[in-house]
Length: 337
Image (cartoon, one colour):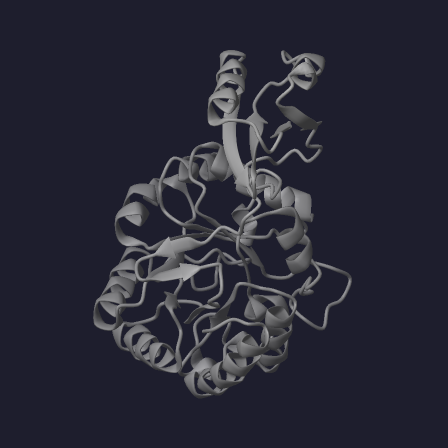
């Protein structure tokens, strides 16, 4: 529910209504929009008599928010959210570029890639330490050792690290060591994990599930935000369709749709969306053109011998070339890299 106050309403009158709503058990968000106040009500609003609210001379309009997600809803937060991480950010006028290998394989590998993607303009380093694989016989990541190697790469380059968490068992370690905690597509609806992440103050990169609707995607973000952590970054990484040529089907329409419905930043993963290295560049350009706030791209210095997803990884040289193209495209969209 959203209470829109009249433009001339004093702060004292706004506070009176806010206090009354809180007494009725609602969580109240005060929203400033132009020359007026709005009050967003979360929780059980069944106890509230809408006629009494409308009878208040300071209330201009009462809107019932139909969408089940509230904190992620743009109605409750009209301005775009910007998630600050160290000296960088995701959202706003600067495109966030996250780059690195699917899996951390060795110190020399991750440090070499980190140095090269930073030189090309990437602001964040990705790398998998714990790898959820379809087959239990495939490489599962270096686990604890992988996290330590990511920390070495961060120390040498200054790039904040992004890596995926698999369960709450490692939550304390991730809070201590990781700059952005990634929730993979397979865990998008692992609600117990999402709730625990919501109790932290770490930025969370939430990937869309392979068969999730946009509303289900936003509801997963709501699970995190409802526990107090509003530092959520959404990632479109392709969905499963009847098409088998590509690994997934990149839903480009989801980016403007989410930007309309939610204030949260949205980035795109063209690597997992396509599963083919030569499609990364055109999909990355398309993502920026439809309004994405950034990209997460798999980069490997030896894709042919990568332990994971080499077929969708681009080389540091191709990444450097892509960054030059994206810089020009960003300028057209009034953004920078």
